[in-house]
Amino acid sequence: MINELKDPRKTFGEAVIEAAGSNPDLVVLSADSSSGSGLGDFPKKFPERHFEFGIMEQGVIGFASGLATTGKIPVFAAIAPFVTARPYEMFRNDLGYMKQNVKVVGRCAGLTYDQLGFTHHSLDDVAIIRTIPGVTILSPGDPVTIKKAVYAMIEHAGPCYMKIGSPKMPVLYEDNVNFRLGKAIVISEGRDVALIGTGTVLSKAVAAAKLLEEAGVSVRLIDMHTIKPLDRDVILSASREIGKIVTVEENFIAGCMGSAIAELCSQESPAKIKMIGIGDFYSGNGPYEELLGKYGLQPEQIKETVIKFLGNK
Amino acid sequence: MDRREILNLELIALNIRRNILRLIRAGEAGHAGGALSSAEILTALYYNLMKVDPGNPGWTLRDRFVLSAGHKCLVLYATLAEKGFFDKSVLDTYGALDSRIPGHPNMHKLPGVETNTGALGHGLSIAGGMALGLRLDRSPAKVYVLMGDGELAEGSNWEAASAAAMHRLENLIVFVDRNKLQISGPTTEVMNYEPLDQRWRSFGWGVRIIDGHDFEAIIGRVNEAPFEKGKPSVIIADTVKSKGLSFAEGRVDYHYWKAKPEELKQAELDLDNIEKQLTAKTENIGQ
Image (cartoon, rainbow over all chains, first blue to last red; front, side, top):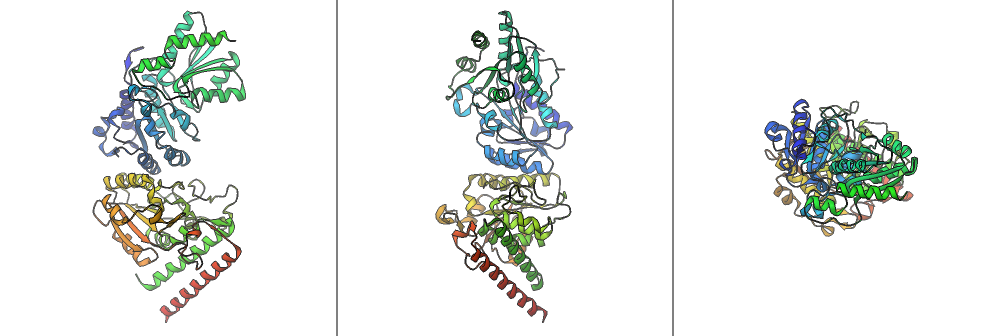
C-alpha cells in the first residue's frame, strides 16, 4: 500500500528467502550478520545453505568468491562499511577482477546507524565500489523496489553491490512497477528541473518534488535505483531537455551518484548540476532524521536548495 | 614409491625449472626464488596427486589448485605448460604487452589457472570457499593451496584458517613453502611466525612438516590427508629458495631476479648438471 512504512532489512530478507526457494544455488554467508540483515529465518529454512563466519568480512568475501567458482550464488549482507571499505581489496580482486557471481549487500547504510557515529556510517561505499570495473551497484529507494532489486540482482550474472538502510521506509510504488536493472524510473515528467534521488533518501526527494510542484516548479523526478551501470539515456535526456539537474543522496558528494552523473554530463551533454549529499567532512552523530536535516536532506530543505539553484540561472 | 617413479618426477621438476628459466629469459626478470623453491610441490601435485585434464580445464570433478602466493606464478605457468594446458611458446611472451601470463596469474587469460592472485593473503579464503562449495555438491574433488611463508604475516590468512577449521574442510590441503626468506631478509627477522606448526595446530588444523624437495614426503603426506578427522590439513614444506641455481640458492637477492646474461648461462649449466646426475641415476636403476 502506498506510503505504508516497511522495514527494509525485513523486506530484503524475505526476498532472499523467497529467491532461495526457487534457486538451489543461492547460499547465504554471514559475518555474525544474518539476523541483523533480515535473514534470521534463512538458516532455519535452508540450514545447508547458510554459512556463519563470525566477524571476518575480508575472509567472507574470499569464501564467497571460492563458492562462486563452484556455481553457487553467494549472498553476503552485513553493515555497509564492513562489506565495502574494510574488505575493499577482496571485493576488487576476488569479486571484481575474478568476475564472480557474488551479491554483497551493505545494510544500515548511509547515516542510518545515526548515533553510532562515523565508523558505522557508510557514505563512501558507492564511491569506492564504483571504481571496480564490472560491478553493478543497486540502491533501491522503497520496499517494493528492494524486493525487485533482490530478484534482479540474483538473476544478473556478475558481482553486485546493493545498498539499503535500516529505518522503516514508505512504499512509493505499486507492486507492478517496472523495475529493470540499469534503467532509472522516471516518476514524473517535468520541464524546470530534473531531481534525481536514490536509495534511502529517495522518499525525501519524492516529498520535495511535491513541495516544488505546489510552489509552481515543474519537476522531472527520477529514481536512480541503479548507480552502475548508469541509465545514460534518462540522464542525457534530462540534461538536453532541461539542462538543470539536482541530485539527492545519502552519500558523500565525492565520488557517488551525483559525481557519476556529473562525469557523464560533463563529457557528453553539459548541464548545470547541484549535488545534495554529505560534504568533505566526517558525519556527526544523533537522531537519524535530525542528521538528515543537518545535511540538508529533508524535503523542505531540498525544495529550498532547488529553488535557490533555479534562481541562480 | 619406487625409485623409477621418483626419478621420473625429478626429471619433470627439472623441465619445470627449465621452463622457469625460459620465462625469466623472456621477461628478463621475475620472482624466481619462490618459484624454484616450490617446483617439486607443483610437480607432485600436477603429475601424481591432482585429478586434472589439460584438455578439459573446466572439468567439474577436477581438483583445484590455488596459488595464494601469486608472485610464484612462474612455477605455475611452467607446470601448466609442461602438463599441456597451453603451448610452451606462450612462455616466451612473459613480460610482453597484454601477455596471457602476467606477473601475477589471471584465470581469464589462461586455461588451468583457477584464481586471480597476487595481493597476498587472499588465496586461502578463496580456496576455503571452493572446498565448501565442492562439499555442498558432494564432490570428491580436493582443493590444494600454495602459500608463501612471508605471506603468513597477512592477517586475512588467519581469518581464513579459523573459518576453514570451523567449517571442518577436510578436502582442503595447504602447502606452506617455507623457504625462510622474503624481500627484506629472513622471514623470522622480518615478522616472526614460528613456531609455525604450533600456530596452525592452534587454529584447528592437522599439521605435518616435510622436506619440500622430497617427492616421497610430499606425496606420502598428501595421501595421508586429512591428518586429523574433521580438520583441514597443512603441510609445512621446508625448501631452499632459488633451488637448483648454484649462485642463487638461499640468497635473498634472488627473490626477484633481474637476470644478467652470465647468470642465465650459469643457470643453464646448473640445470644441465642436474640432468647429468639424474641420467646417471636412471642408468643405475636400469642396471
